[in-house]
Image 1 (cartoon, helix red, strand yellow):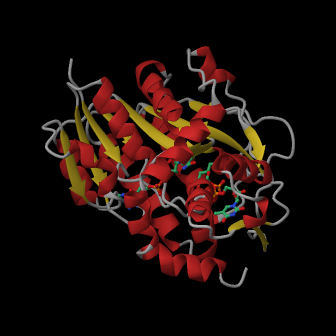
Image 2 (cartoon, protein in one colour):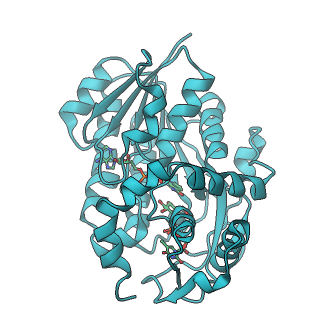
Length: 335
Ligand code: NAD
Ligand code: DAU
């Protein structure tokens, strides 16, 4: 049976990878991509789908109840809400849009879902909602302790989505994934920033002592996890999705430079991020019990990601000479 899937934020990094994944795997389904095209939204990510009769792009804001209501009235089977403001540093500078989109926008989508039948509403949350985890691994039942405005806005949306399950029996599933990497990631995030800077021999601005730890998840593995949860996830439940590749930023930077054959002298130590979470680490045994496992070959996934940026300058040079230029100047000039 063919399904109608609403993907929000589908012109961003994970959303566009998810749409490619879905079209390849379920060519009979129809995908509607609702995206506001903020600085992070990029239709270049979806060029290969131009002319596909089962893919529709709608430029619009998830906070706009008229646009959202109109889409739900077309009859949707599944909603996957990726749309969000996502960059921690920008949330520290100016949290306003984070509250508007991540919290209020999610509320608008949930309200529309409540008044129209949907079989499954996936709320894409994040491991950042647990806050900094000095040791051990976060479980889905752990308290939420978000420590920056981005993480707090995602925690608000996460619990709001749950409240629509508990109160209205809306078929909600919440995912909390770790740091994704792969093609089409906006170069404000550490891996594409460091790879593209390195390719242009620009210093890599490593925050603080470089010993903060992140758990790296290849974006395709994240897409597979969301697919599995749409099929077999239990409604009202939260699922951690961790790559199981815990690395300090210093080690990650070393791996990038080593693969590119560039010297460590390209690293520039800069002032730390305010309130910088020291470590994220997920216990993913709950989703593993459903049959998901992360990819087993982190080294090759990282290498293939670096290769992708090396081979697709057309994609990131346009971004880096546009909106990103002023952002980079403001963000890094006096660090
Ligand atoms: P991204 O910043 O690359 O893309 C976000 C997309 O949302 C963009 O296309 C943007 O135009 C769109 N958008 C923003 N505001 C909107 C609005 N009001 N209405 C409609 N569209 C809007 O983000 P990403 O890294 O792909 O993250 C996608 C989701 O996954 C987010 O919800 C994020 O919190 C979550 N997440 C990301 C990671 C990660 O490592 N990147 C890890 C865990 C969870
Ligand atoms: O953990 C999931 C989260 O991962 C997602 O929810 C967020 O949307 C996503 O942006 C990401 O957040 P991080 O803050 O972990 O990602 P970022 O790429 O910004 O930074 C990763 C680490 O690298 C972090 O410890 C800060 C450090 N860093 C980052 C930048 C941009 C640097 O050292 N230098 C930099 O220039």
